[in-house]
Image 1 (cartoon, rainbow, N blue to C red):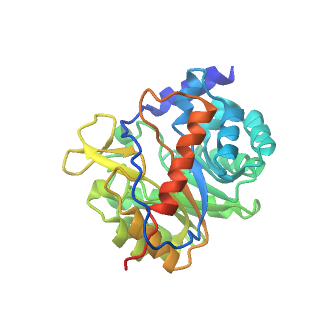
Image 2: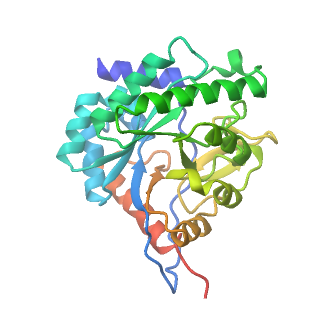
Length: 320
Protein backbone atom coordinates (compact mmCIF):
# COMPACT_ATOMS: atom_id res chain seq x y z
CA UNK A 1 0.00 0.00 0.00
CA UNK A 2 2.81 2.41 0.89
CA UNK A 3 4.58 1.71 -2.41
CA UNK A 4 1.37 2.28 -4.36
CA UNK A 5 0.74 5.54 -2.51
CA UNK A 6 4.30 6.53 -3.27
CA UNK A 7 3.87 5.86 -6.99
CA UNK A 8 0.75 8.01 -7.00
CA UNK A 9 2.62 10.76 -5.16
CA UNK A 10 5.47 10.64 -7.67
CA UNK A 11 3.06 10.75 -10.61
CA UNK A 12 1.13 13.65 -9.09
CA UNK A 13 4.35 15.69 -8.93
CA UNK A 14 5.32 14.81 -12.51
CA UNK A 15 8.77 13.56 -11.52
CA UNK A 16 11.34 12.81 -14.23
CA UNK A 17 14.91 11.59 -13.83
CA UNK A 18 17.35 14.34 -14.88
CA UNK A 19 20.39 13.76 -17.03
CA UNK A 20 23.66 13.56 -15.16
CA UNK A 21 27.34 13.40 -15.90
CA UNK A 22 29.95 11.22 -14.30
CA UNK A 23 31.80 12.43 -11.26
CA UNK A 24 35.18 13.83 -12.22
CA UNK A 25 37.87 13.79 -9.56
CA UNK A 26 39.65 17.14 -9.39
CA UNK A 27 43.23 17.75 -8.36
CA UNK A 28 43.86 18.12 -4.65
CA UNK A 29 44.48 21.80 -3.91
CA UNK A 30 47.71 22.94 -2.33
CA UNK A 31 46.00 24.85 0.49
CA UNK A 32 42.87 23.71 2.27
CA UNK A 33 40.48 25.09 4.83
CA UNK A 34 38.21 23.16 7.13
CA UNK A 35 34.61 23.14 5.93
CA UNK A 36 32.68 24.73 8.78
CA UNK A 37 29.17 23.69 7.78
CA UNK A 38 27.89 20.27 8.72
CA UNK A 39 26.87 18.14 5.76
CA UNK A 40 23.53 16.56 4.99
CA UNK A 41 22.26 14.91 1.83
CA UNK A 42 19.06 15.41 -0.13
CA UNK A 43 18.11 11.91 -1.27
CA UNK A 44 15.03 12.76 -3.30
CA UNK A 45 16.14 11.08 -6.53
CA UNK A 46 16.68 7.73 -4.81
CA UNK A 47 12.88 7.54 -4.61
CA UNK A 48 12.97 6.45 -8.25
CA UNK A 49 15.19 3.51 -7.28
CA UNK A 50 12.77 2.68 -4.47
CA UNK A 51 9.86 2.52 -6.89
CA UNK A 52 11.81 -0.11 -8.81
CA UNK A 53 12.13 -2.12 -5.61
CA UNK A 54 15.89 -1.56 -5.39
CA UNK A 55 16.10 0.82 -2.43
CA UNK A 56 14.18 1.52 0.77
CA UNK A 57 14.52 3.67 3.86
CA UNK A 58 16.74 1.15 5.66
CA UNK A 59 19.14 0.88 2.71
CA UNK A 60 19.38 4.65 2.43
CA UNK A 61 20.22 4.79 6.13
CA UNK A 62 22.93 2.18 5.55
CA UNK A 63 24.40 4.18 2.68
CA UNK A 64 24.55 7.39 4.71
CA UNK A 65 26.15 5.56 7.64
CA UNK A 66 28.81 4.05 5.40
CA UNK A 67 29.45 7.41 3.75
CA UNK A 68 29.76 8.98 7.21
CA UNK A 69 27.07 11.56 6.47
CA UNK A 70 25.17 12.23 9.71
CA UNK A 71 22.17 14.11 8.31
CA UNK A 72 19.48 13.80 5.69
CA UNK A 73 17.01 16.22 4.08
CA UNK A 74 13.74 14.38 3.47
CA UNK A 75 10.83 15.30 1.22
CA UNK A 76 7.20 14.43 1.84
CA UNK A 77 7.24 12.28 -1.31
CA UNK A 78 9.90 10.12 0.30
CA UNK A 79 7.95 9.51 3.48
CA UNK A 80 4.95 8.65 1.30
CA UNK A 81 6.97 6.06 -0.63
CA UNK A 82 8.89 4.53 2.29
CA UNK A 83 6.25 5.03 4.97
CA UNK A 84 6.80 7.46 7.83
CA UNK A 85 7.18 4.79 10.52
CA UNK A 86 9.72 2.83 8.47
CA UNK A 87 11.62 6.02 7.73
CA UNK A 88 11.75 6.96 11.43
CA UNK A 89 12.90 3.45 12.33
CA UNK A 90 15.68 3.55 9.70
CA UNK A 91 16.95 6.94 10.85
CA UNK A 92 17.08 5.78 14.47
CA UNK A 93 18.73 2.48 13.57
CA UNK A 94 21.50 4.08 11.53
CA UNK A 95 21.86 7.17 13.74
CA UNK A 96 20.98 9.63 10.99
CA UNK A 97 19.37 12.97 11.84
CA UNK A 98 16.70 14.62 9.74
CA UNK A 99 18.18 18.09 9.23
CA UNK A 100 15.23 19.42 7.25
CA UNK A 101 11.81 18.11 6.27
CA UNK A 102 10.49 19.43 2.97
CA UNK A 103 6.75 19.55 2.31
CA UNK A 104 4.56 20.90 -0.47
CA UNK A 105 1.88 23.19 0.98
CA UNK A 106 0.18 25.36 -1.60
CA UNK A 107 -0.41 28.94 -0.49
CA UNK A 108 -2.90 29.25 -3.33
CA UNK A 109 -5.38 26.76 -1.82
CA UNK A 110 -6.46 28.85 1.13
CA UNK A 111 -9.17 26.46 2.32
CA UNK A 112 -6.62 23.63 2.77
CA UNK A 113 -3.48 25.42 3.88
CA UNK A 114 -4.02 25.26 7.66
CA UNK A 115 -4.68 21.50 7.62
CA UNK A 116 -1.68 20.83 5.38
CA UNK A 117 0.61 23.00 7.47
CA UNK A 118 -0.44 21.12 10.60
CA UNK A 119 0.29 17.80 8.87
CA UNK A 120 3.71 18.99 7.67
CA UNK A 121 4.66 20.35 11.09
CA UNK A 122 3.55 17.18 12.82
CA UNK A 123 5.62 15.04 10.42
CA UNK A 124 8.66 17.26 10.94
CA UNK A 125 8.20 16.90 14.70
CA UNK A 126 8.02 13.12 14.51
CA UNK A 127 11.16 13.05 12.37
CA UNK A 128 12.96 15.30 14.84
CA UNK A 129 13.65 17.89 12.13
CA UNK A 130 14.51 21.39 13.40
CA UNK A 131 13.58 22.90 10.02
CA UNK A 132 10.48 22.66 7.85
CA UNK A 133 11.00 23.86 4.30
CA UNK A 134 7.72 24.62 2.56
CA UNK A 135 7.31 24.38 -1.20
CA UNK A 136 4.50 26.94 -1.65
CA UNK A 137 2.79 25.47 -4.70
CA UNK A 138 1.56 22.16 -6.01
CA UNK A 139 2.29 20.45 -9.29
CA UNK A 140 0.37 21.85 -12.27
CA UNK A 141 -0.90 24.87 -10.35
CA UNK A 142 0.68 27.19 -12.90
CA UNK A 143 -2.27 26.71 -15.25
CA UNK A 144 -4.70 27.86 -12.60
CA UNK A 145 -2.73 30.53 -10.75
CA UNK A 146 0.02 31.52 -13.15
CA UNK A 147 -2.03 34.38 -14.60
CA UNK A 148 -2.38 36.12 -11.21
CA UNK A 149 -0.63 39.47 -10.97
CA UNK A 150 2.75 39.73 -9.27
CA UNK A 151 1.11 41.65 -6.42
CA UNK A 152 -1.53 38.93 -5.95
CA UNK A 153 1.07 36.15 -5.90
CA UNK A 154 3.19 38.02 -3.40
CA UNK A 155 0.15 38.60 -1.21
CA UNK A 156 -0.63 34.87 -1.15
CA UNK A 157 2.99 34.01 -0.34
CA UNK A 158 3.23 36.50 2.51
CA UNK A 159 -0.09 35.42 4.02
CA UNK A 160 0.73 31.72 3.71
CA UNK A 161 4.19 31.94 5.25
CA UNK A 162 3.01 34.24 8.04
CA UNK A 163 0.50 31.58 8.98
CA UNK A 164 3.16 28.87 8.77
CA UNK A 165 5.54 30.76 11.06
CA UNK A 166 2.70 31.45 13.48
CA UNK A 167 1.65 27.78 13.59
CA UNK A 168 5.23 26.57 14.00
CA UNK A 169 5.67 28.40 17.30
CA UNK A 170 4.15 25.55 19.27
CA UNK A 171 6.40 22.97 17.65
CA UNK A 172 9.83 24.50 18.16
CA UNK A 173 10.44 24.11 14.43
CA UNK A 174 11.71 26.88 12.18
CA UNK A 175 9.82 27.38 8.92
CA UNK A 176 11.89 28.23 5.88
CA UNK A 177 11.50 28.83 2.15
CA UNK A 178 13.84 28.03 -0.72
CA UNK A 179 14.64 30.16 -3.72
CA UNK A 180 12.44 28.40 -6.27
CA UNK A 181 13.28 27.72 -9.94
CA UNK A 182 9.68 27.90 -11.22
CA UNK A 183 9.37 31.00 -13.38
CA UNK A 184 5.73 31.65 -12.49
CA UNK A 185 6.31 31.88 -8.74
CA UNK A 186 8.11 35.07 -7.60
CA UNK A 187 10.75 33.29 -5.53
CA UNK A 188 13.64 32.75 -7.92
CA UNK A 189 15.28 36.17 -7.91
CA UNK A 190 17.03 37.69 -4.90
CA UNK A 191 14.62 40.62 -5.06
CA UNK A 192 11.54 38.40 -4.85
CA UNK A 193 12.96 36.29 -2.00
CA UNK A 194 13.95 39.43 -0.11
CA UNK A 195 10.45 40.84 -0.53
CA UNK A 196 8.95 37.79 1.19
CA UNK A 197 11.61 37.40 3.89
CA UNK A 198 11.40 41.02 4.97
CA UNK A 199 7.62 40.76 5.39
CA UNK A 200 7.55 37.50 7.35
CA UNK A 201 9.57 37.85 10.57
CA UNK A 202 11.13 34.56 11.64
CA UNK A 203 11.04 32.99 8.19
CA UNK A 204 14.37 31.42 7.22
CA UNK A 205 15.91 30.94 3.79
CA UNK A 206 17.13 27.65 2.38
CA UNK A 207 19.75 28.87 -0.06
CA UNK A 208 19.68 26.70 -3.17
CA UNK A 209 22.90 27.40 -5.03
CA UNK A 210 21.33 27.22 -8.51
CA UNK A 211 17.63 28.12 -8.34
CA UNK A 212 18.17 31.80 -9.16
CA UNK A 213 19.59 30.94 -12.57
CA UNK A 214 16.26 30.52 -14.44
CA UNK A 215 15.71 34.29 -14.08
CA UNK A 216 19.31 35.14 -14.91
CA UNK A 217 20.52 35.42 -11.32
CA UNK A 218 24.07 34.84 -10.09
CA UNK A 219 24.67 32.60 -7.09
CA UNK A 220 27.40 34.80 -5.58
CA UNK A 221 25.36 38.02 -5.79
CA UNK A 222 22.32 36.15 -4.43
CA UNK A 223 24.27 34.86 -1.45
CA UNK A 224 25.78 38.23 -0.60
CA UNK A 225 22.40 39.97 -0.69
CA UNK A 226 20.46 37.41 1.34
CA UNK A 227 23.02 35.79 3.63
CA UNK A 228 21.50 37.28 6.83
CA UNK A 229 18.38 35.17 6.21
CA UNK A 230 20.11 31.85 5.37
CA UNK A 231 19.53 29.01 7.84
CA UNK A 232 20.23 26.02 5.57
CA UNK A 233 21.87 25.37 2.19
CA UNK A 234 21.11 23.06 -0.72
CA UNK A 235 24.40 22.44 -2.52
CA UNK A 236 23.32 21.91 -6.11
CA UNK A 237 25.20 21.91 -9.39
CA UNK A 238 23.44 22.24 -12.74
CA UNK A 239 23.95 22.19 -16.48
CA UNK A 240 22.08 24.26 -19.05
CA UNK A 241 20.78 22.54 -22.16
CA UNK A 242 17.65 21.33 -23.91
CA UNK A 243 16.53 18.45 -21.68
CA UNK A 244 12.71 18.78 -21.77
CA UNK A 245 12.49 17.59 -18.16
CA UNK A 246 14.71 20.39 -16.85
CA UNK A 247 13.55 23.65 -15.31
CA UNK A 248 12.52 26.32 -17.81
CA UNK A 249 14.87 29.28 -18.20
CA UNK A 250 13.85 32.75 -19.33
CA UNK A 251 15.79 32.33 -22.56
CA UNK A 252 14.01 29.08 -23.44
CA UNK A 253 16.79 26.69 -22.44
CA UNK A 254 16.50 24.16 -19.59
CA UNK A 255 18.35 23.71 -16.32
CA UNK A 256 19.07 20.18 -15.07
CA UNK A 257 20.67 18.88 -11.88
CA UNK A 258 24.07 17.27 -12.33
CA UNK A 259 26.78 15.74 -10.18
CA UNK A 260 28.66 18.31 -8.09
CA UNK A 261 31.74 19.60 -9.86
CA UNK A 262 30.51 18.90 -13.39
CA UNK A 263 28.20 21.89 -13.82
CA UNK A 264 28.29 25.68 -13.85
CA UNK A 265 27.64 26.58 -10.19
CA UNK A 266 30.54 28.37 -8.45
CA UNK A 267 30.61 26.02 -5.47
CA UNK A 268 34.23 26.74 -4.59
CA UNK A 269 33.70 30.48 -4.24
CA UNK A 270 30.40 30.05 -2.43
CA UNK A 271 31.84 27.71 0.18
CA UNK A 272 34.85 29.95 0.67
CA UNK A 273 32.56 32.91 1.30
CA UNK A 274 30.32 30.96 3.68
CA UNK A 275 33.38 29.75 5.57
CA UNK A 276 34.74 33.29 5.74
CA UNK A 277 31.39 34.49 7.09
CA UNK A 278 31.37 31.74 9.72
CA UNK A 279 28.27 29.91 8.47
CA UNK A 280 27.77 27.04 10.92
CA UNK A 281 24.50 25.68 9.58
CA UNK A 282 23.97 22.56 7.52
CA UNK A 283 24.60 22.17 3.81
CA UNK A 284 22.68 19.41 2.06
CA UNK A 285 24.28 17.86 -1.00
CA UNK A 286 21.63 17.54 -3.70
CA UNK A 287 22.39 13.95 -4.57
CA UNK A 288 22.40 12.85 -8.18
CA UNK A 289 23.87 9.84 -9.89
CA UNK A 290 24.25 8.95 -13.58
CA UNK A 291 21.41 7.10 -15.39
CA UNK A 292 21.77 3.33 -15.26
CA UNK A 293 23.80 3.53 -12.06
CA UNK A 294 23.68 0.27 -10.06
CA UNK A 295 21.14 0.80 -7.28
CA UNK A 296 22.86 -0.76 -4.29
CA UNK A 297 23.82 0.38 -0.84
CA UNK A 298 27.54 0.04 -1.61
CA UNK A 299 27.41 2.03 -4.84
CA UNK A 300 25.26 4.80 -3.37
CA UNK A 301 27.59 5.02 -0.37
CA UNK A 302 30.59 5.16 -2.69
CA UNK A 303 29.04 8.01 -4.69
CA UNK A 304 28.08 9.92 -1.53
CA UNK A 305 31.69 9.66 -0.31
CA UNK A 306 32.86 11.16 -3.61
CA UNK A 307 30.51 14.10 -3.10
CA UNK A 308 31.96 14.73 0.35
CA UNK A 309 35.52 14.32 -0.96
CA UNK A 310 34.78 16.82 -3.72
CA UNK A 311 33.46 19.39 -1.28
CA UNK A 312 36.41 19.06 1.07
CA UNK A 313 39.21 18.69 -1.50
CA UNK A 314 38.04 20.70 -4.49
CA UNK A 315 35.18 23.01 -3.63
CA UNK A 316 36.95 24.60 -0.68
CA UNK A 317 40.28 26.15 -1.56
CA UNK A 318 42.07 29.42 -1.01
CA UNK A 319 44.06 31.23 -3.71
CA UNK A 320 47.79 31.51 -3.12
